[in-house]
Length: 159
Image 1 (cartoon, rainbow, N blue to C red):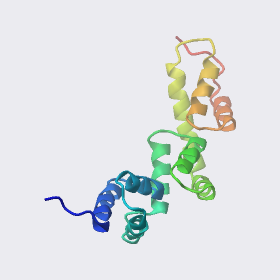
Image 2 (spheres, one colour; image 1 turned 30 degrees about the vertical axis):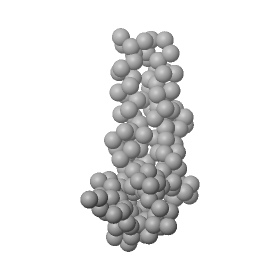
Image 3 (spheres, helix red, strand yellow; image 1 turned 60 degrees about the vertical axis):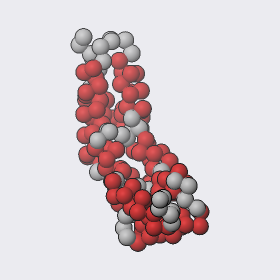
Image 4 (cartoon, rainbow, N blue to C red; image 1 turned 90 degrees about the vertical axis):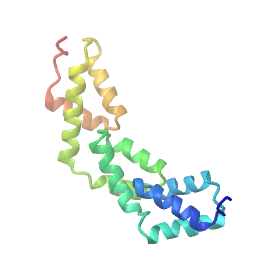
């Protein structure tokens, strides 16, 4: 005999979903839609998740930003656009990124560029490849240029 589906079913399902890792409200709503939760129950489920602190936007933003910077070495621009995709408002995303430690952010970019520089085995276009790589990681051209000037990548890779 199949158990009847009600709001409690969706609340339990989404509680586990949110307990596994921090989620944005948009991700929770997408999951509810995927589970075919009726729209009139979705608001109740989301509010219950917020009240029980399974869903917390500030905590999600902090975890997301720190994780992407520390684990994936992403730059501010890429993190900003991914936060927008997650349903975070532009002003909230900008505010979160303004709290990133400048020294740590710069050190991450330096380490990233040094590692990539060592891997470049072609002498032609090495600098443009390095810049393109860092731009793809979401760093601004100005930040990349200042780190390159500081580290003085004037010579080609030695391979």
